[in-house]
Image (cartoon, rainbow, N blue to C red; front, side, top):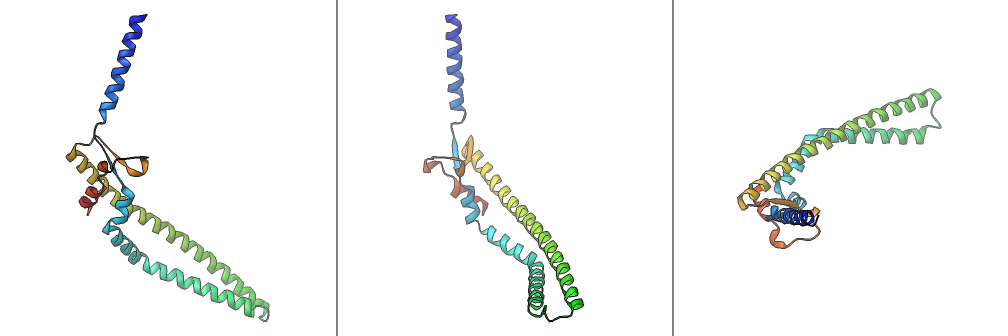
Length: 165
């Protein structure tokens, strides 16, 4: 029994020591900092603004038309004929529904495109991290947001940013 406990203890110590040696080289990268400092991010924002400019203008025009008609209904509604008032109310409801639908589709398309562009940038960052990790012999590269404490010497954010630009 003592022999078995002794062997199990040595085995456990060996496993623990191997686990601590498995990740000798660790680096930290701050991906959110890279995203903020990346000049390509500004270009993507401008590209998306240009891509959706026409739809934004159309939605703004629809909104201002709706507001003008609502003001007219509030201002002149009491003095209008019942048939004119009903027609204006029905038209407002139809336009409001159309506006809400277009705004919803616009928001979905805009979010989808933002995610696509963000994923492209993140893919470039991930590729750069892989190259730097293999070049410098890092076993693990961790995002700085997942780390409680790190030595500044472990930070490779600047190197990754240089490579991505």
